[in-house]
Length: 330
Image (cartoon, rainbow, N blue to C red; front, top):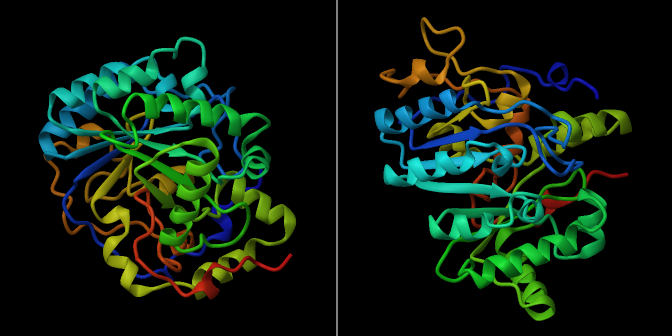
């Protein structure tokens, strides 16, 4: 796989500074039951990196210390971490809003037969990957049979109240080097197709741009399209998205307990910076004043500010010029 950081210039993206921490986004490990082409984590079944219980306990202490309102669990497939359920239970007991970034097919993995019921019982919000409402497109991006398995997972979640009384968000990623279309119109298409054809209900759709790092960035380099995609992101940059980018209020924690400004910086090895802390860990953050600290940025950050904007919570703006959503020429 090609190294992408060397292709990302630093110093050109607008400077950003932190606000107080409201969200801890915790990567519980890179093991996953899928190996998706667009995955910026390069997760897969053979990855062995996994957060241990001691580090997970430090995360709980950080929730208390920062009064963070949201614990956002990701991976890999975060549910495959043996401490996932304990961490969820403890965070809920602290009054924390818990989000599980679920790939849906993990609900059918051995040992996970009661996972959906566990999530519903603790009212965990689910953010589920479904990069398209068409079977061929999903299977092309994520593997044969993933679409049907995802539908089975969605129906099971619907039966438990997800999409009605419990929050179920679906996530769209473009198939290639293009920006997502406007979130509102695409959500309407998802509702129409998934509802009419399959009887699926969901709370909202989140549109995320593909980041030019890890597998997706490497693919662009191999195809000679990396520079064109970066030019698309830069040309579609909107300053008004800067106030809402996720790194202003979120910290990203990797499976070892090391801290980054966002999940994408984590994958590039760009650690969060604070005076006197060359290698910040969860323990270091307890009692540390982070408001006003500079955020580490590079050219991949244009992926968050291009067009309608992109974050772990979906689009940052409510409208976008349709021209910015056009793909790079083949």
